[in-house]
Length: 111
Length: 113
Image 1 (cartoon, rainbow over the protein chains, first blue to last red):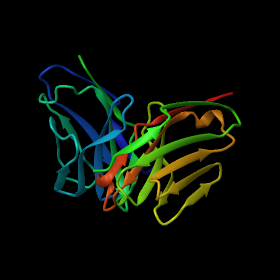
Image 2: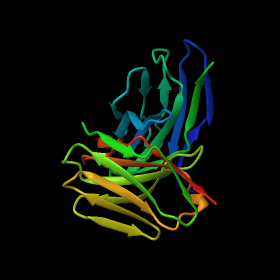
Image 3: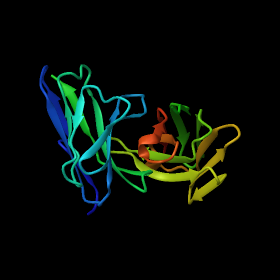
């Protein structure tokens, strides 16, 4: 089945620790995105990549980093600089740069 | 940038009734307006979208209307069913990529059997 796979589904971070969220797609989409979702808020863009080996900051990039070494993969690292990391993280890819296809998300919590 | 406001934040309807969710946007240059449905523990899924050159679009029980002059657009769900219960997000795009897509804060719809 074609789609976007995010792992793990749940992740716990200790203070001062970096954690990496995985996102893999087999839709052959060029563009990929990371969003953060907090309760009662809309989706906020963290980073996006329109092509391999290139990515841009979104609205809330501070404390996060990404890489795009392969078309299929767009991992997100939540660094220790992100002081409020608890949230639901969504990865997406797009066709025609508008219609987003989302993964099932990763819930990150702080221990 | 664009600012999208969505109302109501929660909505409860009886099964079989209609549900309406409204969104307003601030930037008259926005030209693409999708709606996403998010079920519990899952990612959002596109259910319908409309472009600025169209006033209304229907797909079975769901429809979207757009009023460019007033800068608002609405999602209409008729004959609601329990499986319609979810969080619905509207969004507005300034074009040129999903990086220019701005989301509303969501509406939690509950359909009471």
